[in-house]
Amino acid sequence: MIVGLDLGYSAVKVVANGFAATFPSVVGTADESQFSAETSGSPVIILHDNQRYFYGDAAVSMSRLESRREDRHWINSDEYLVLAKAAIVQATGDLDSLSIITGLPVSYYKRDRRAAVDALQGLSTISWIDRGMVGQRQFSSVKVAVVPQPFGSLFSRALLPSGRVADSDFLTKPVGVIDVGGKTTNILVANRASEVTRQSASVLVGGWDLVRHLRQALSESCPALELRDHELVRAARDRFVQYYGADVPIGKLVDSAAGSLARSIVSEATHLWGSGANLSAILISGGGANLIGEALRLQFGSHTNVELLPNPEMANAIGYHRYGRFLESTTSD
Image (cartoon, rainbow, N blue to C red; front, side, top):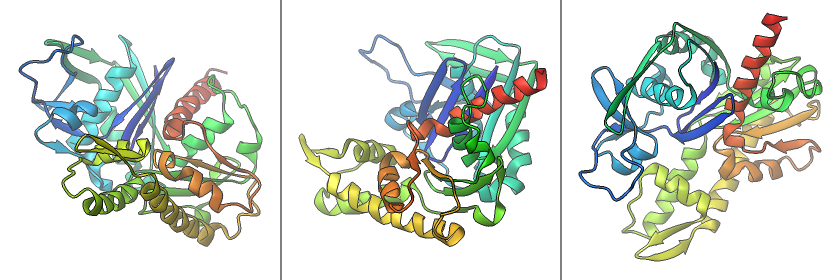
């Protein structure tokens, strides 16, 4: 089975045949409730290195201790492997082989590609606990391909779900991609589906900067409010917080922070691209684009072909999966 896997600092996104899911990039101690009125049972627990872990929403809401990494070396960490295992368990059934397509930030790709391949190729056996029952999935072979992250967005626009080419212009003409992540924003120009290195970079600004700005603003207007990072992300998307039982609108705070971040990112892009007049299109994607994508699009007002991809958070994972199908079709031809 081919799995498109986007392991971001903010969220994990996974796409397989007929399956797509996302969950927060948080790992925590498996502190199970002594009682719950929920009929669906306890969250799934991932077993890793003789330890038990919650992940995603369960870690955010239930773990006494949680961990969320934001450094480039996290591909060598337990958190990275637990999240990868959780995504694969969700996306795959009882299959013999696994092919993972994933990505790395543009600036980290050359140096870290081998480490990512080695880490993910080691996932031939995955164990978990679901409703008190231990499960295990074993793969006879695990193949891994790694691309610079924004190519996922490019492939999601250029390829069909089958892997066939949907729009050849996006593969043959120069296209800009701004992929807004949690910690990093990838800025890339691809021409004939190849990276134009002098016009591509990763910058240390992303969705978490908006969250930090929002936390600071709320510390003044709602001083008793205590929210974890991913709870603030949800509040930013909902554009309100609950404070002593009342819904407090925060849309103006979110818009102000989004505008500042968008101007910073576009400034970096224009350093690399100039006016961008030579680009046939500019694609905007990434989990951070849910918060600042429209502000980014407006910053490129003079460019006639700027596209905020639908479901921008999932765009890379969708593109990785389609690229995997493309590679499969070209190999079998």
